[in-house]
Length: 341
Ligand code: CUA
Image 1 (cartoon, rainbow, N blue to C red):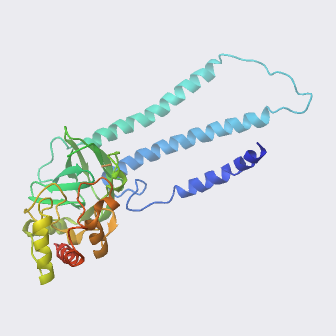
Image 2 (cartoon, rainbow, N blue to C red):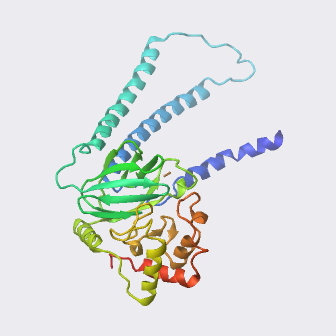
């Protein structure tokens, strides 16, 4: 028993360490440093409730301390039971009305923000960019119907305007979340959910799946690449024209392997299947499969045995079917699929 009492003494220390560690994080993946209009609105709500909670905490702690000190037992003789009171009308009113006021201060902006975040999703304003998001176990498909562009994993958006999303799922419920820009929104199979994001400055932001969807749920990452409007438009133009082109003999060999083994599931440009991620701009990607550093070796390892990195994903392992030389050629071809310089 005594041993345990000593352990408990470390509890305050552990709490302080925990408190300090909660400050650790990724600048590209945090709701606490908002870089989007929606994230800003949500951040303000969080701060409002935080200020109210701090206020309540300070008042309660103060009363607690005063009572503790003022009414403490003073020595052996101090055994009197204090005067017993009940039903103090002023106090009763006070501790009923004050919380109601605090809840109203919280509720009114929360409801207003909730409606504001939904603004325009039913009737998208003329000329706005609309993106169809389809979640798959465990990757993201992005389609720009007006621009006739389809891509995956890296979501390109223009900055300084609201971009409207229509979200669905191909298999189970996922949730589309870009904490730094705002969100999150479930993707379902039966219904289309809608939301918008508005990135204030160019940059790369990290996205996550925020709904437990299987063994690789935590690995279902994507990136948001926010660009100035003209850069975004140039990107979309290049994506529209992009297709399969091999720049060397090795790449040509890779292209042939791709056409035999991969194209059933993966499209480049508009050619190919749709059950796996579209690879039109694979060479520009931030990550391999959303999680691995974008290196030749990682691409080879991934193709050889995808389940090692993302358990439960649908891509078959090609380690037995392709030899090292073929894998190298495939990597050269895939790395050449670029639209950006
Ligand atoms: Cu998809 Cu979690």
